[in-house]
Length: 98
Image (cartoon, rainbow, N blue to C red; front, top):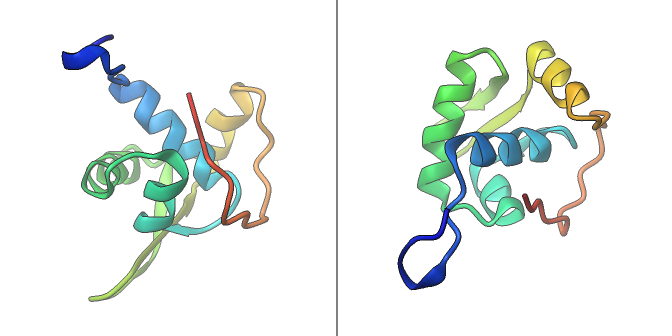
């Protein structure tokens, strides 16, 4: 959907799928997910809350300074349904686009 100034706005499904695809490569902080998916960190945080509630991702570390997330088993099943095999590598420079 095009918004103001001809900028494409991704749907909630697109944003959540991009986040899950990012998490398919391993554990990540909100900032890492934000960088790789080019989604504002606050938006990533809000969608991660939804994904944790739907049991598609897990918060593995939560402290005052950092929160780290990973795919849950349900999340891995969803990613596989998209034809993507979850791996446990961390490519810091990789970008996720939908």
